Amino acid sequence: MSKAMKYAVVIERGPTSYGAHVPDLPGCVAVGETKAEVVVLIREAIELYLEALEEDGEAIPAPQAYELTEV
Image (tube, rainbow, N blue to C red; front, side, top):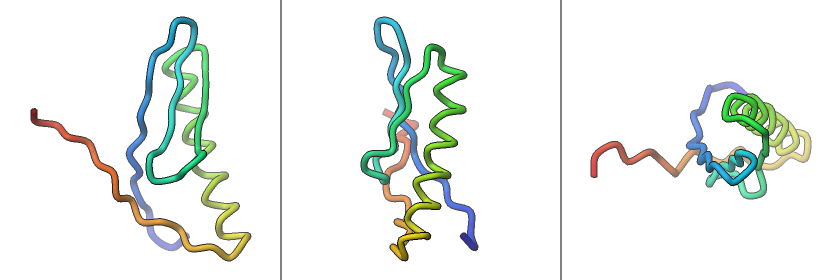
C-alpha cells in the first residue's frame, strides 16, 4: 500500500466481551475480552484484510465511513 488510509472502526461492548468491525471492509471483525485487546486484534485484522486484497489483485477500498462528532 502506497498511502496510509484511516478506516472507521465500530467497537461494541457485549455482556462478556468486546466486538469490533470495520464498515468499509465487509467481514473484517475481531472479538476480545477487553477493549484494549479488541483494538489490537482489529488493527491486525485490517492489516491482514488489506494484504489479502492486494495478494488477490483486488482494489483497496477507500474509506467511506466516518465518525460523527457533533450531534
